[in-house]
Amino acid sequence: MRDTKMIRTVPVEEINERVYLDPRDFVYECEKEYSDQLEQTVTDILESGKRVVFLAGPSASGKTTTANFLANRLERRGIHATVVSMDNFYLGRGNVPLLEDGTEDYESVYALDVGRINACMDQLYEYGCTNFPIFDFAIDSPSDETQTIRIGAESILIVEGIHALNPLFSQNQFGQSMAKLYVSVNTQFTYRDRIVYSPRTIRYVRRLVRDYHFRGQPLERTTEMWGNVCKGEELYIRPFKDQADWWIDSTLNYEGCVFHHFLYTILNENKYRIGPELRELNELYEIFDYFDDIDKEEIPAESLLHEFIK
Image (cartoon, rainbow, N blue to C red; front, side):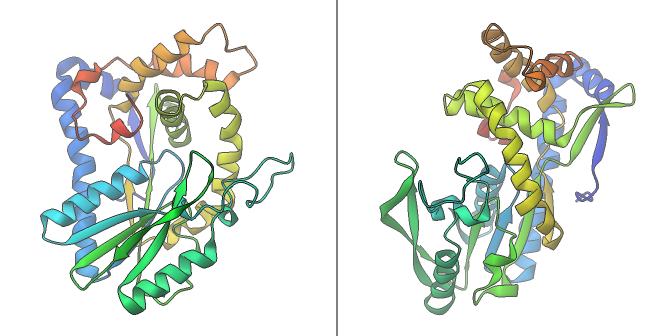
């Protein structure tokens, strides 16, 4: 498995050449590189003997898909695996910290019920069973329903969330016996030796497309939120990433060619509403001019990219 703590640099010229020669083979190679990281991580988890994995990463890093892919691979090796999201521990509207402008800060670790998470983990440690809450995003409040979680000697629990590596969530009886995994985009792309597509921009593009297609959210709204998302990362996520036992780079080298199609389409649908003051959105036109297009039909059904595209 490659050293995923080091930011990789990939020239766009090489990508376009591979797309020109054989796009299907190039897509396969990119997907295999990500899949190989998953397989190695599963091996590492099993060799560690740890039954709980806390999986963290910033927004649009592919945490949810990666967690589920890991669980599927564990199942193939005869280990029962359950994935739960820390999002279910949100305190809900009216109970989260406020930003300076008075809006609620869902990027803060204190938007979660820290005490309840640790209490659930303590119960799981002592009794092998606990009830996790279920958050109702439709009403922005915890649901009355709960999810029963069990863990045994031959099972693994994966807890995914942006704050999963925060030391606040190691203050339970599992403590240091929890495995920690960090997932993020850790690749940048250059054109004529100039960085044109950075890891943070890649995640920004993923979130723009996902929010537009799956959440019905205008591009402008995602852009308005992005600044606070990045600020939250610097405060609550990045300081703890080096505590991870393993890293996974969720970048697929061909994804710039895919988003060339998807984002261009969305930008053109909204070009009369996107004013010149939204510099970030207008700069995306220039970025995706560098990438050749790959038809969405080339994307495998099991690709991580389906977390973001429709």
